[in-house]
Length: 449
Ligand code: ADP
Image 1 (tube, rainbow, N blue to C red):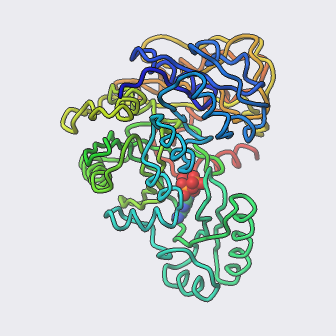
Image 2: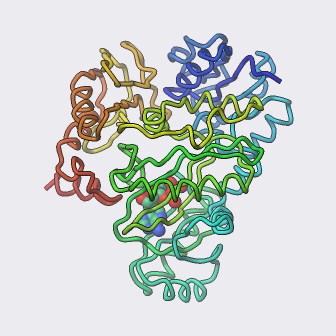
């Protein structure tokens, strides 16, 4: 089986990213799009384009039947889901494979296990990954919750088993709030994810978010591509990511990376994955695994020189990993800024027409974006419109270049988060790398005063 035509079940910059990797491999692409995206750049560049429905994602980008039909009609022999949308939908992955179409993603059973956070934590524990202390599984009754919370100590965090995207979490400071917060978390989880299951974890005071990129060939071979530090977050959503982490030693990287790769070998994991940890005082605590490509994958590409999408496609095509662990070396430093169409300080979405667009350029500057002048950013989807990824031999050099590149970026007609990034990159704590997952929100609060 050789993949010759990939249907890209996504939109925006990631659809373009996949198209580029495919074309560089001599593979044709099929874009699918909602009526709102008829003029999108990935639709223009793809070899074939099929409209799959109206603007609401539920009727287009999440519409299983429409996407499978589009693959059949266009003769696609593989589907790449990108991130978000159907990328972590085990059922959809099964349907794709049942149609003899290659799924450019992990085995459906692994998507399913890791998509349920309780099952994921259990599996991670069995595979030898260090866990955040907490309940061994789902917690349903209050007395049990009380006992567990007392054992691990307050504050604790109540999380939805089916949660994602930073939603469905409640921090509980003391026992007298536990019962009401558990009820709230349960009913909110039910409303948002259709599943009221919750579990409890120790709430770490000041951790960093450090994640490891892994790749498996599905036959028991796996490698790790080092870590990314994604501690600069607002409402549990990443804003700026960097690799390597300013706090990890090469020994830590090697030790944790090997633990992650070993776990993937044991699972027989296939494709790209990210194992997310919180890191505090030198210790790692597993929080979840994402069974897909991540938004921030380019920082890893910058410091390893590997094309992660190409690697995904090769693996889906039954080829082995193109590198061994010994051949993977980390060189220099990379930072990614997520540029959203939103007010940089209130974060209110700002869709609309881009009247002028000029992308930054120059040495070691990469812009992943589907923007062009006169493009209308539709209001229906995620507000991220561009990613600016900059590489430097040192972290200092990378930051200087990033500041220069941000000065060059011009996006007119809508508000963007560029001013936020510019100010962020002047903060002493950011310059020194001394920040935790709490830092950004505290800084924003401080700034408002
Ligand atoms: P999601 O799937 O919604 O992204 P995660 O479990 O990955 O949820 O957690 C998202 C973010 O929430 C983390 O990056 C971190 O900022 C915060 N968080 C999660 N668990 C804890 C914890 N035990 N203690 C402190 N912060 C946490």
